[in-house]
Length: 325
Image 1: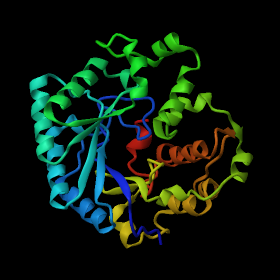
Image 2: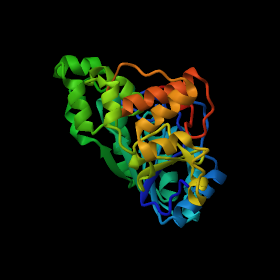
Image 3: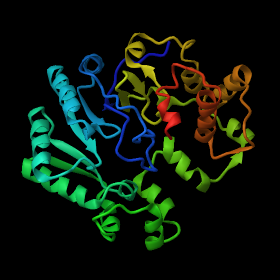
């Protein structure tokens, strides 16, 4: 059985819809997603399970969780009722309009037990969000008595070199800081090359023969990791390093049937080699000659299963992860 007995630290994905379509987003969030948001009943189920597994604090992310402040307040109230502490809420600051409306939202967040916002500060977000909004939100937090967790201050000088009244493309950063800026940016950020981030950087990655990738295949133990996991608005447990793979949290607690979640099970027990065998034998998958490592091969298979074959596989959810990349 696929089962989890305890969890240490993680996050709640309240929505996948986002105001931006950042090129580094491992969750493939964008404005294209449905306007779904975590319901109070789903939040109650999730927080009760997490507390029972020993996880008494989480962060909240998205998508952009503050696109719908009315919806997030209900989730926060449920967290408080269940005794689960909110460490911080991740935000890109796109929702900032003016000081008065922002102060009202921050006041409500504080009332619900939120005392920190993680505010994104990086060139990826700056492609969509003018830096003045980030600065204004930080100033508003200071006035409201809410701490700011800046992610990452290392990029402040880069962005400050641009006009803060408008967004700036990554091409502009390359022109200003050099041809290798995108690669240096990924390293400085500590980028998780999954989802749209893999699509962005795959052309720059060194390829190796398909057979070599198979020889190096190892079980993906991170899939059942207890650190930095996420649970999304549909109640799915999302592994710490691999969005687009999921199992309902309530099933993982009871013990999920590996016969139902065959993609997840193949990767966890045999690695990408096991997934290749499953996909080729049962679904007619034909590999390319070269791949940029096992994650690239894994995504090629998953995209094939979801997008080309149109399969409704329970562990390849949500499908938007593949459709909106």
